[in-house]
Image (cartoon, rainbow, N blue to C red; front, side, top):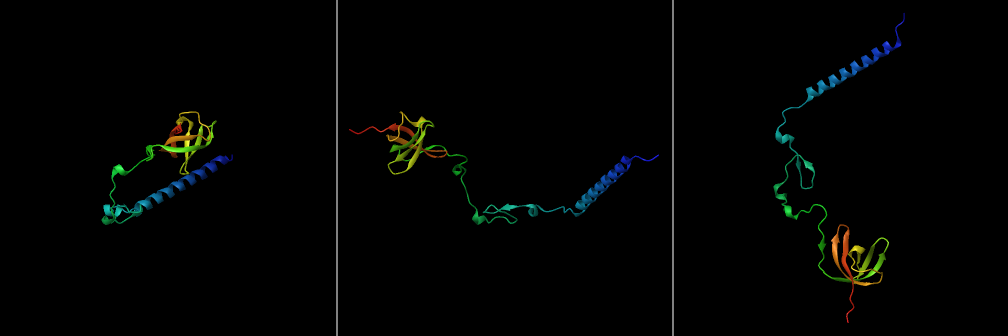
Length: 151
């Protein structure tokens, strides 16, 4: 009676697995044999130079820079008022459906504003007084109020 074909394939697969195991064992033994042990601490140290590059030599103490922790700002800076407390300008553009517009200052600069910062119903062409603050995306007009005509 003839042997089944599967038994031959099983034997071949088992031989292949044993060969792979033997190859892994040999590689592991070779790595262990070539492993360098006992490096000193100085040989294992890595330094970062003044440009941020990794180097094997310590940095020059004369090039050391001292920083104050209070001077370092992390994240978006807090909203700050600009020096001029009250500015004058004219509403150049206003999109009522989206609720934002731009004010052309008397010095020619455009400042963004949102309808939430206006104290009255805004229209294009209105002369306004406002304060400028630095927001997360740049300068913003706040406290937009219709300019009172001088009598």
